[in-house]
Amino acid sequence: MLQLSFAPVLALTGKIDLDTIDVSNLNRQFLFQKKHVGKSKAEVAKESVLQFCPSANITAYHDSIMNPDYNVEFFRKFVLVMNALDNRAARNHVNRMCLSADIPLIESGTAGYLGQVTVIKKGQTECYECQPKPTQKTFPGCTIRNTPSEPIHCIVWAKYLFNQLFGEEDADQEVSPDQADPEARWDSAEAAAKASASEQDGDIKRVSTKDWARSTGYDPVKLFNKLFKDDIRYLLTMDKLWKKRKAPMPLDWEELLQQASPSEAVSVSGLKDQQVFGVQGYAQMFSSSVKTLREDLQQKGDGAELVWDKDDPPAMDFVTAAANLRMHIFSMNMKSRFDVKSMAGNIIPAIATTNAIIAGLIVLEGLKILSGQMDKCRTIFLNKQPNPRKKLLVPCALDPPSSNCYVCASRPEVTVRLNVHKTTVLSLQDKILKERFGMVAPDVQIEDGKGTILISSEEGETEANNNKVLSDFGIRNGSRLQSDDFLQDYTLQLNLLHSEELEKDVEFEVVGEVPEKGPAPAAEDGKSIANGNKDSAQPSTSSKVPVEEDDDDDVLILDSDEEPSSSSAMNVSTEGGSAQKRKLADAETGESSAKRKRLDKPTASEQDDDDDIIALD
Image (cartoon, rainbow, N blue to C red):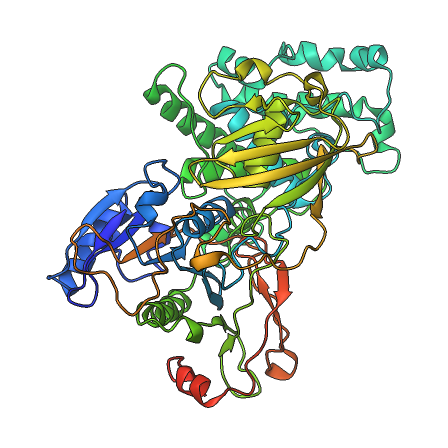
């Protein structure tokens, strides 16, 4: 976190960032240089800002905004929060913290040449979660493990493989052939007999991927033959999988060594990362990356784990090599390291000028808030093509809060369809409350008249419940749960619908928010009864900015310099070179939400406001 002061305008500004600087960060901003690679972004940002503003009062913090230390009281120190985050979980969290603290939030994002800025104010505008965001695309386990048909399937498999070998094992990320694939329906005894030759060739016993890899000392050749020869031969024994598909072709390490030079590239023009190598080249890349990762693991000591990072060269080499080898086996065109990184990291190349324009727009909206002109705030889109008025920057009216929002409504409520006889308490906690609804430390009680505690955020209190199914606690169709997250000062009511007809690989469905109830009545004396305490701090958009006390900060900047996902581009129609009316896109998925009002005919006051926006004619 970086805290800045630009006296006399602002007393104190905070910047929170957990990342360190990577080479890939250098082309998208102006604070970091090559000499800063490997250093804390917050620390270097502090040093850079002091060079052009020596009078600034700066304290740098290298930390995550999800840290419980940054609670509602922490947010109440500020009169404004600016977001520049790269993941939905953090955006959701900050959105809720600002609602609870009743602090204005400026949300922003960029994707290539596109960008957007919007303002969120409790009770006045939509919050970040008012419009439903589609969940990020996932793939059935049997597709990843048995029958990949697209490069992304192989890339996901390679990322899973990295975790299975070097990182934290996850039962949902298994990479070995899926014997339970319902499409196969093969005779296991016959398959075992067919695969026996493969078992004997490598003397490989089918145990945990990580356990087996450790037993071989992470031998690259044995790993290669297991993953790309033995496991593929095992897949071939599932005859029914290949009646309508082209069967995979196993690879053998020794045979590859006898073939052409591994350094040969299929595409030799362009940068190295944009070249596509032959299968021998990726086999050598696989071997060298395994050796490097093995050394990294050994240096960390027994029981250590590595975390996959697209900006870590050995990790990226491993995923690139493993994914391409699997693509080759399943008769797909192989991809360059650049393409694999784009898909594996879900990124769009970031552009420094786009970031600079959006940063400027954030500041302009912030100045409106600090001067008490909340009514002049806008959602602003940066287009790739000028609109009919020859402007790249298009301001839109801020939408009011959604009465059905499960975050900022007066009584947040959702309906979830699941199978109470199969859904465990742990799944409810991790997959529904934390992953789907963005809670950090939920406490859950059953509304059964007794206030039965199902989940406690206190460590160890309800761990015995984790592997029990919901029906063990009397939960059935129509049961209601109350979930509280005290860190976020957030309460969510869950209505449960029991169903035994969910689609394959679907554990639950969010049916939608409760039926339309109309706007909640205004709270007396301006006190809100929505999420957040009744005694929330007074709105900080007053023209009397509290700068007298040294303890009061003014602006909190939440920054993550990671590039947003590859699908984060906003929906823009550019027929005839003109941007048409469009929807606000989610920063991670690019999916659109509700329509925004275009300000095609600004009033006089709005025309003055438009002067704050740079029009590129």
